[in-house]
Image (cartoon, rainbow, N blue to C red; front, side):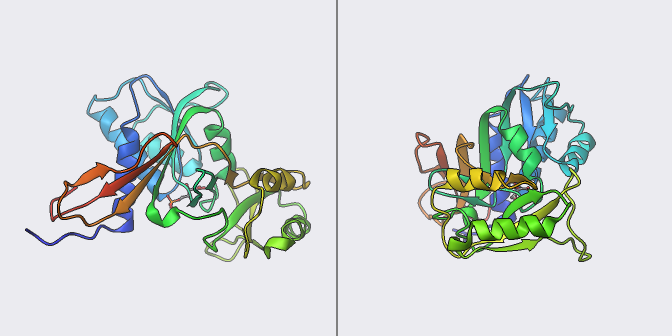
Length: 263
Ligand SMILES: O=C(CO)[C@H](O)[C@H](O)COP(=O)(O)O
């Protein structure tokens, strides 16, 4: 038997993405997510369209970047104004808690993602196992909040004070040139770093939205209908991939095992 191949994080993302695209049917209106995991799903949808295995698809992109990718693949696009009801959205996440609540927006597209994914009948979230957390904010990484540029410091301080009991530190996100990161909607992102959990997530989310200057937060509560988690488990006795968890809670754990063959 050849030695097991340890898959990279990107390969795990691709496995989750390809699995999610199995939910896609011809004729669907699809929410197209943003990020390195969602990119694999969009690529796959493009491939299936080119091969004629999917037809009559309309994509609603969640960012300018995804829009460019989808157009380059020949995926017909539209928007929420023309298609207010979306059949299925596929998107990644930064964190997933045990109740399938998500943190999204480390890629900066949280507002459009929340609008599109809030309008869909089914939202399949795709992640590798590194995104699983006990509570949102628990990875020690950012909980993004989109804010208007006007007096952003004022808004950031309000956010930090709001979550003072969770040890919150609010920081303006910068781009790679050290300038404020600007979203597709012309706004800024304030990243919240938390030391303790937020308590009731709905209360926390609602409280951020009551601060004038906040446009949207990256808490996606009770929105994902299915989460596909690609997990690397080396198992000498079973095949390349198998489902190990039930779909009742909407959580699908997708186990990948490779023995040298290409996935
Ligand atoms: O919310 C997002 C973008 O706003 C992404 O879905 C999230 O950041 C996950 O990204 P990746 O798939 O690259 O890990």
